[in-house]
Length: 121
Image (cartoon, rainbow, N blue to C red; front, side, top):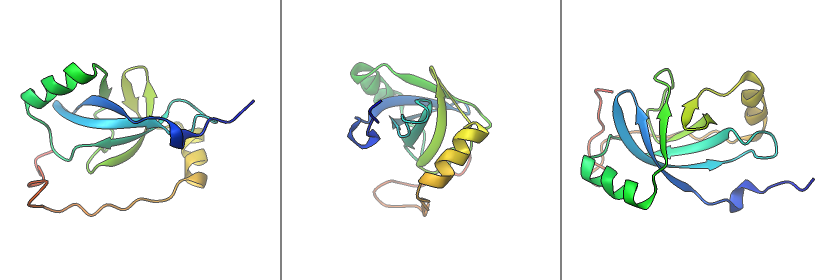
């Protein structure tokens, strides 16, 4: 069986629903050789306006619903995708990814380009 190279897979544009707010982001399967459920999520810092959501819906109608228990503050996250739902990785998936992933540290700060961070989340 030939291994899939996750690096050549395209990012998929998604609308993300989390804690009663809506974000825009991208997902990508990053461990298809172990589990196609494991995805890397890259999302907007802050919820987005309805007009942007409409534009994204016109481009792609994939909408995901993240469990409220997930900590999705910041932009980069590993999650388990089950159909249109994002949830925590299983213990086996966490162990697998823990051995293979680099740690990504993200400094979150207000920025003139990105705008202020929504601290009410």
